[in-house]
Image 1: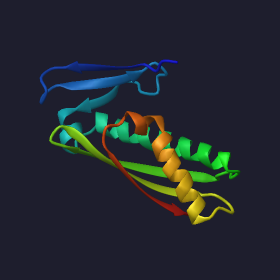
Image 2: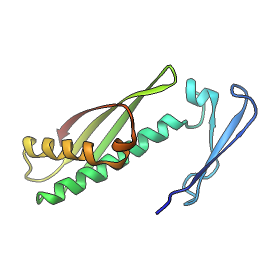
Image 3: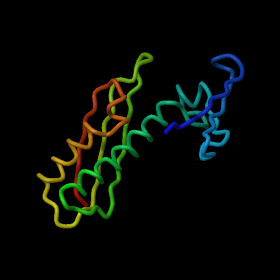
Image 4: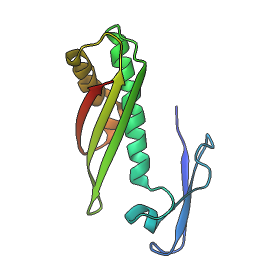
Length: 136
């Protein structure tokens, strides 16, 4: 299986602008610029997309781990906060809120640790990953 995305950049690094597209068309001329990456300009940036990918992948991995031990989650909400310092991704902090009927804090924490290690996006990121989890 291959997943495909394309970036088109026009112009200089600071004055230019780009768009991101995906084969699925979910990303369809999604804008990004110097300001959206290094300031608060309109558009997305690679780090935000990595954070979204990490949050989504982890949520699915946690659901899988919970299923392996007999729990069916009602809701898993994961936020990934990616630190980008001096041109390097240094850290992803996962904040997880899960609604899983009948589960204990110990079991969800064990499943979350497994999910963090086994999530394909966690495996590809070369950075420190921390996590906090709470039951809702």
